[in-house]
Structure formats: C-alpha cells, structure tokens
Image (cartoon, rainbow, N blue to C red; front, side, top):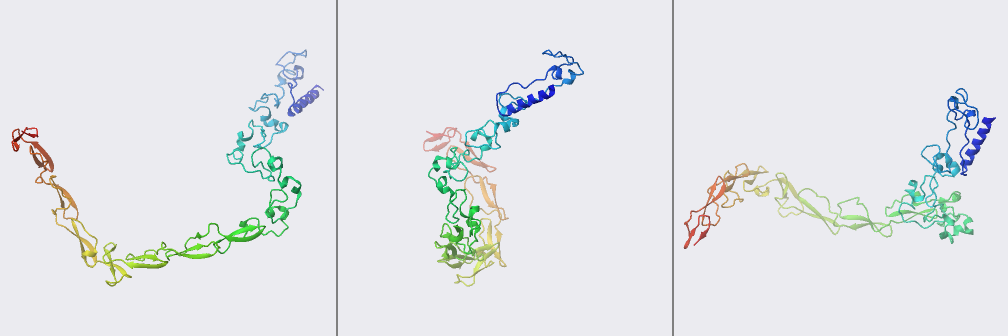
Length: 412
C-alpha cells in the first residue's frame, strides 16, 4: 500500500510540473521503504533502521530526476532548464518553428524573433525592404507582427470585409475569394475553361519577335520587350542584320559592320550600303612564308592570288646583314659578308658593330675608334674596347697662353 501511495503522489507532482505550476520538491522515499537508507542506516524520521538485506544496500538512489519546467533549475542535469528542455515542450506549448515577428520565443530556445537562428532567411530579418501587406496570403508581409486582416493596413481591403466571401471570377486578374490564389491558380477554377495560369503554360511563338502572354487564362502574344531588338545573326558576313520591329515583325537592317570573313589572304572584303565589296591587295603583299600576292592583271582590283615571289622586291625585306632574294619562286635571304658595318655604329665608343656573315650582327672591340671627351688636358684612348682618359702633365699647352695643371684642368 505504501508503494502505491508513493506512485500516485509522484505522478501528481509530474502532472503539476508539466502544467508549469509552482512546484515543491518531489516526494522522497523513507528508509523503511528502501529508499535512501545506507548499508545499515538509521531511519531519519523514526522508521526502523534498514539493514543491508531490506532497507540498506537494496535501496538504490531513489527516482530518476525529472525537469520541473518552472523552477529555474536544470533538474535532470541535461544542460537545459525549464521550457528549453525538450521534456517540457508539451507543457510549455513550444512550437517546432519560430514565428519571426510575434515577439515571442515560440520554439523555446531562449531566442525570440530575428534573434533566433531559424529566422536568418526570413524576409523580415534578412535586411530586405518589407513589402506591403497582401491581406490574403497568410504571411506578415510588412513585418509588423500582424497578418492579413489583423493588420490595420488591410482595414479597407476587400478581403477583410463582406466581399471576402465572393466566388473566384477566374478571369479578371483578381483574388476575388481572398484565398491568396488568383484566377486559374485558384482550385475553385479547376472546372472552368482556363487555358493558362502563367505565360510559361503557353506555346512558344514561331516568330522570334513575339513573346507569350497569359491574360485571364487565355494565351496570347505581344512584341518582345526592348524592340527593336537586334537578334543573333544567322548569316554573319552578309552586310545585313535581322532585327525585331516595334510591331513584333522581323526585318533586315543594313549593317556595314557585318563585313564578310577574309576571302583568301590577297583579298580585303568590306560592306558598303549593305552590299559586299572589296579589293585585291597589291602585288608583293606578303601572304605567307615566302609567298606574296599577285593580281591576275596589273589593272585588276577584284582578283589576286597568293603565289611564290617574282623577284626580290616581292619578298619580305632584309636588314643590314641579310638581303631579300627570290629564287625559283621562293623568297629567302642572301647574307652580307662578315665585317660589313651596320647602321648601329656610334663613333668614338671603342667598339664596332659588324655583320658576322651568317645573317646576324655582333659587337667587336675597335681600339682605333678613340673616344673624345673634349678636354685638351686629357689623353683619350681605347684599350680592348674600353675607353680611358689620362691627365696630361702639368705645363702642357692647352690653348693661347694656357697650360694644364696636371689634374685635367686647363688655365692661365
């Protein structure tokens, strides 16, 4: 009988805790009933001492701790207190998801509204500009904590008056029955002759200058946005470009920038007033390795062929150490003999720039190419291609009535 009475008392305590009422400590078993007595403990309240066989070692540690839900204590030692403990969600009325605009901690995680991690993507917490309240979408569109007709912004909305019971018209672009669904998107219109809900439900027009429309459940077309619209050219290089007109019709526009691709290396095409024109390149124009252009006739501007050279003048130019040549219709180079001076030479630098006989040029020392610093009190010379300037002895004449001082200076 004692064990039964204890069970009922503990059950009543649990029910009281789940309802969030002020709690007292749960009932404790006494030593005589095998509760908290030691191995041979003495009953603290007058009960008989429990021995090891009955009230001592067999007593255990008492009932498993249960979260009280309203005492500010983590009773079951799981790191969560009161309504933050999943054991209390039912009694505390915790929701699975946070309502991000009602000022309450709906999911009992200690964070309310936009401070709750679950609201990071909510429009009212993401920094986006709130929209106007729709009054029939079941959402707090303007983020003021009031939804649809409960929002003062909806006081004059038809969906918040007697008209909210009107049937859906299905083809007027309005949400007549205020269920958040308009025309053919409303299940109430399933039996009506709805041809489309959105333009994507309609067939793609064969005319690329038209786009689909859906008005009142009926498919249609209208000129493409941004007309006149230049389209991708299906025939590039014809001096013309297709365009969409403002009436949705397809036209051709003259386009002198749509020149044909190069027709051979010896012909230069271009557009003029929408027609293809061009000219043959002059004789001797390089058109490949060892090749040059040659017109079909000296006066021809319409045709020219890329052929081997006719003479050295039709070949790529050479330089100081190689000269252009034409041999058996092929261009090449004749090397200038070694030692020939190039145009890169500079006087008085102790060097000379000469051809090496293999088509290239090299620098060589030239001690005969003495430098000149313009000072009459120095002896200028070259040594292995390097310039040197030695001071003249003191007393060396350096001008009318002037002599050198031995330090490279000329004076009286």
